[in-house]
Structures are given as C-alpha cells and as structure tokens.
Image (cartoon, rainbow, N blue to C red; front, side, top):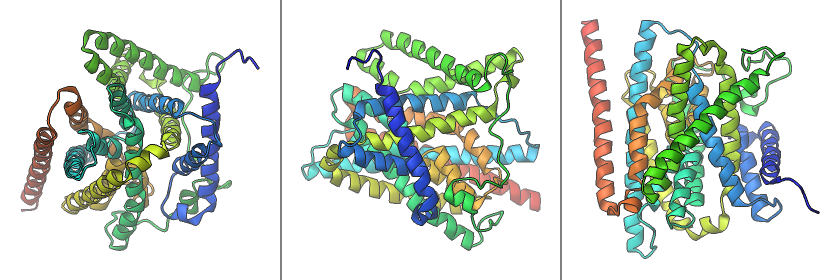
Length: 458
C-alpha cells in the first residue's frame, strides 16, 4: 500500500505510549516496584527494550534516539521558561542560596570524580587488551550526572566523528546510573529516616506515592492555571508555542554559529543544544517580563511540559539501547559503572553527613540528581520530605546556576581526546583540578558558615 504520509515518528510515539501505560499498570500492581519507587517510564522502557530486541516492536534505534534528543531539549527549554511564584523571606532565601551553592559544587565534584574513575578504568582495561577509545570512560558522567539526553547528544556527535555505538553506550551508562539512584538511594533514604535524620519525620509513604496513582476520593493537585481565554487559544497550546519559538531560535542560532566553526566543533555544538536552548529560554522569559507579560507564562503548565518530556524521554532512552552492542562491551560497562556508582555514593554520603543542616534531605536530592536527573533527586527527597516542607526542593532549581559552569566545562572536556587529541592522562589531570576546585569551595563554604553560627551563639 502506498501511504501518502510519513508515520514513523507517530508510530514510535504510539508504542512509547503503550509501554508507558504498561509501566503505570505494573507500578500500581507489583510490590517490588513500589518498594523502590521505580518510575513507570523505566518499567515501560525496559519492557519495550525486550520487545524491540525480539523484533516484536518494529522500531529502529535511530527514531527512538531522535525522539529522545528532541524531548531532552524540550525539557530544558521548558525549565528555562518556568519561574517560581512562591515568595521566600530573607532567612529562607539565605538558606536556599547556601544549599544551592553546596549542591552545585557537589555536582562539580561528582562530575569530575566520575570522569576520573571512568578514565582510569579505561587505562587499566586497555592494558588488558580491551582497546576502548579514550573517551569511553567519560560516558560515565555524561550518563550518570547529565542523564540520558546529554549522553545521547554527545554520543551521537562522537558517532559522527567515527566512534561507533557511542550513543547507545551513553544511554546504557545513563540507565546504570538510574539503577544506583533507586536501588541504593531508596534504602539510604529509609535508613536515614530510621536514624531520625529527617527534619520533618515522615509517616509511612502513602499508597498513592507507592502505587503512583491518585485515589479517586483524594484531593488532587492543580496542574496549572489558564492564562489565555479558550475562546481565543487553548492555554496548553499557548504554553507549548513558547517552547516551540525558543526551539526554533536555538536551532537557527546553533546552525549559524556552527557554520562559522570547524566541522568538528560545529558537530560538537549540536550536543549543547539543551544548554543553549536553556539560555535562550531565560532570555525570552526576561524579555516577556520586561514587557509586563510574565503572568502569561504559567509555571504549573510548564512543569507539566517538562514532566511529559522527561517521562517519554526515559521510555525512548531505555528502548533505544541496542543489546548486542551492550553485550559486546559488558565487562567494561560493569566495571566502570559499579566503581563509579560506589564512589559517587561515598562522595554524597560523606559530604551529606558534614552539612550544617538538612543533611538527609540535601544528600538524597543531590544523590538522585548525580545518578539520574533532578526529577530523580526530587523523588528521593519526597521519601524524607513528602510535602516538600524544607527548602531543599527549591534549591533543586537554583543549584543549576552554580552547577552550570562545571557541566559546561566538563561536557567540553570529555571530548578533548577526540577533538584536540589530548592524552587520556592529561584529560584526567584536568578533571582532578576541577574536583579540587569544587571540593575547596565546599570546604570554604562550610568553614565560613560554621564560623558565622559560632559567632551568633557566642
């Protein structure tokens, strides 16, 4: 039959939707998934991966990777358009600022440490004859800390520069990070609660949180507010149109700048689409604010757009993994991921214990973030702080300001062996410097805060 239109993307969307719904059903029924709070998108994605591997679902990895890339960019643009309506007093602002600085620098430490572990593992594994390309281990921070979208973006660029299977390897590292986030993070949360470390000691998690579905009789949260009249345009259409405008501006900007750079740097620039899109979203929001139109952007609906993008992104991420490729590199992947996961856990636990306040809450939030995404961190935080009564949830948004320099620098640095021919050891040493800078700021911040508190109490 001659079909007059192209349906590949929509068929992929339909299969992803089926997998997501299967994940929702299984999360609501299976106790093991409820115990570790495994998100429906990961459950559904895993089922989709199995079905696609046996060719029951006729989808190519390319279409899933393409959708994952665009969904990742949309999620960041939506974050950039979102603002906080809540007003915070001076004391609360100070606490948020200090907590955000701490978490931003922990993110810097984690990125550097994961890269160091990955790089050193590659040196050792290559000594034993595995013949891994130099940046193979640097997929660890891309997958663990930056998440599947960025691991896919950079991996795809590396593939175009001649390093085969980098995208699916990056997605595999991202999924491994999620495993640590839930199977280690959730027990850490319960352990901290039992030891009385939670500021607002939670009751047993409600069945709604465990099952992931609201009860029929329970009070529902409001998804957002209508800022346009339905006689003119639907509010969701308007909010999505803002995302679309920023996406197009970002595309034009990257295309224009990339055409002025060398082919290799132009390729790399597309891997930063999410970051440039985030910056442009900030600028667009600033311009709208200056013209008195900020009230038209509804944070609630923008949060829903972000959440929608992340859920479908994770389904696509897991389904896009090519099992044959993963099996080919299974030993290096296991060695690097297990070591990186253990060291990341120790890092977050060590610095979390030495905090001046909200030890458990901030530790859980940053641990979930550096092994998954901010959404994962908020999910772990919700175990210890179900109603988000502490400032930690707000800090999750602000910390990106202080974490951005590390993310930007680190994302460029992981490609140094590929773009500039740096040796692996040289690149690792630069990451050591990055770790030392972030760790020094953390220690200096702790010293100054404790000194100030002693003066106030003396």
